[in-house]
Length: 402
Image (cartoon, rainbow, N blue to C red; front, side, top):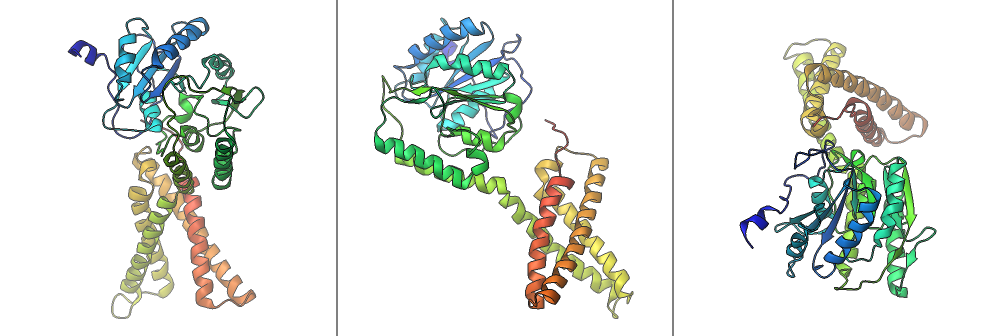
C-alpha cells in the first residue's frame, strides 16, 4: 500500500477512553450531526454491502449530515483495506486501523473519539443489525432522547433463528445483570444490544472502562442518561463470515458487570478515603500530645482537643483533595474553590463527629453493646457517612472543564 492510502487512515486516539464534548472538525468544514461507528474484525466480505446500504438510507434521511467510521482491529483478511478502498466512492466513509488495541468496546469508543457528530452510534458490520431501523432511531434522537436502543425485546423485535441454548444464555446473562446492576441494566429491555445511538453530551468527559463487548452497559452506567427510547428490531442471521460469540465473551460480560458495580460504588475512592482518615487519627493524637501533655505545652485538654481535631481535619482535607478526589478537584482549581471545599469538609466532619457520639451512646447505653465494639461500629458508620456526604457536597461536580 502506498503512502497516500496509508495517510488517509484515521489516526488512532491515544490515552484515556474519554470523549470530548466539543466537536472539532478535522477537515475544516462544519461538523456532521451523526457519526456511526462500525467496529470490525474479519468482515471484509460484509463491509461493502453494509456501507452501501447505510449510505443509501442516510443520504435520504440526513444528506451531508453524517459520517461512517469503520474501526478495524487489524483483521487478517485486511478488512480495513477493503473499507479504505471504498472511501473514494463514499466521501462520508472514514477508516481506522488499530494495531495495538483489541476489543469491540474499545473500538467503539476510539471511533467515537475520532467522530465529529453530536449524535454517536454503533452498528455491527455483519448485517445482523438491519440498517433500516436507523431511521426510527434517528427520529427518537431528533425528538430529544439521550439514548435510543434497538431492542429485540419490545414490540417489533425478536431473533430470527436462535437455538434454545442461545436464547437461554442471552436471557440468563440479562437476569444476572439485573441482579448485579439493577439500576443500570433495568433501564432498558435489551441491555445486551450492540445497536444504539447516544447524545455526545450525555457521555462527554466520562472515563470509560469497558471489558468485553457489551458497550451499552458502560454507557448506561457511566453516562448522564435521562430520556431513553427503545425501537424494536429483529436480529438477523449472519450471511457472510463467522460468529464471534464465545464463552470467553460471556465471562468478560460477567467481569464487566462486577467491575462496573464496584466502580459505581466507588470502592477504590472509599478505600483511599479510609486510608486518609486513618492517617488523621495519628495527626490528631500527635497534636493532642504536643499541646496537652504535662511534659510539653500542658494546655487544657478541651482546647487542645479542639485544635488537634481541626489540624487532623485540615490534614485529611489536603490528602483527600490531592488524592481521593483528585479527578474532581482538578476541574475546580483556584483558592476560592478550594476554600469552599474545605469549609464544607469541616462541616461534614463536625456533623459526623456529633453522629459518632450519638451512635456510640445509643449502642452502649440503650442496647448494651460493648463500648469498644460500639465505638468501632460508630466509626465505621460515620466513615461511610463522611465519605458519601463529602462526595455529594464537598467535591460535588458543579462545572465541567476540559
